Amino acid sequence: MKDEIVKKVMAILGCSFLLLFLFSVAIKASVKKELNLQTTYVAARDIPPRTQIKESDLLPITIPSTYLFDHAYRTQEDIVGKYTEIQGMIPAGSIFYKSMLFAEEAIPDLPSAQLREGQSAYTLSVDMEKLGGPIVAGQRVDIYLAIDRKEEAPISDCLFENVRIVSIKDHKGLDLADENSTGVPSFVVLAISKEDVALFNVAERIGSIRLVASSKSYETEEEAILCQDSLVTSYLQKM
Image (cartoon, rainbow, N blue to C red; front, side, top):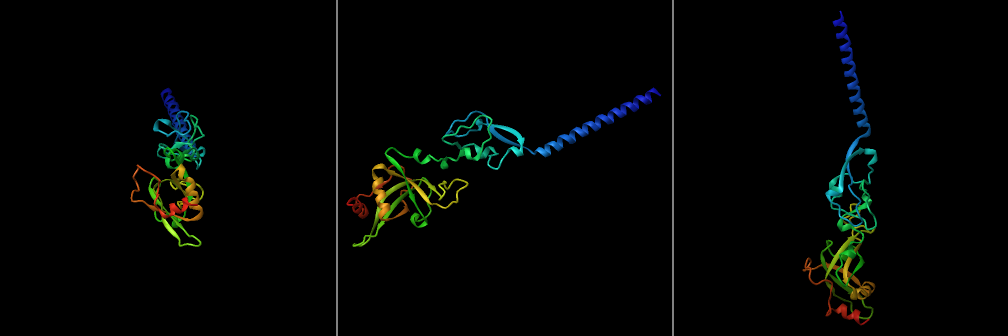
């Protein structure tokens, strides 16, 4: 009799523990589903301004999806290799927001950083006619100038050779490589010798400028060579 009672008690306890276990599992599954936990990355240390992000700068964490906004990067591939902004430090433990990071070619102050000694960054408004064909940042172009003179025949000739394109931007000022860019070029930033900036200003004011892909498109020795024997150069220098 006692054995039967013990067996019944043990069976009841076993069923109770099983029910508690199943209830616990169900609660955990429900909470996990409700939280929608996702793995993302936060800064493993304080990351100074204008620093390229490395894998060692990332710390994986699992957090509810509600803490991840659309403007936050979620994958390691989206973060590693990008640069922090020039005036912003990312504190340890912070999520990587898209406004904090830039691709190398989209760094706001990149044009100045890419200039050689004695050069200035000259921003030129462009359209498809001025571009004269597809161009990309880093490429060299020849710059042709056409001047429609009032009392004389118009002249057209090469003004500069082998001018390096530092960056190409859309009408919002975003680099074409930026994921938010329209992809339509509106401005190009050119590396021009400082002593030739005034001449370029006059050329842009009185004539029509056209950029033509140079036969020396990727040579890196001499840049922005003023064509001394050009018709348009002589005309500008006499003004």
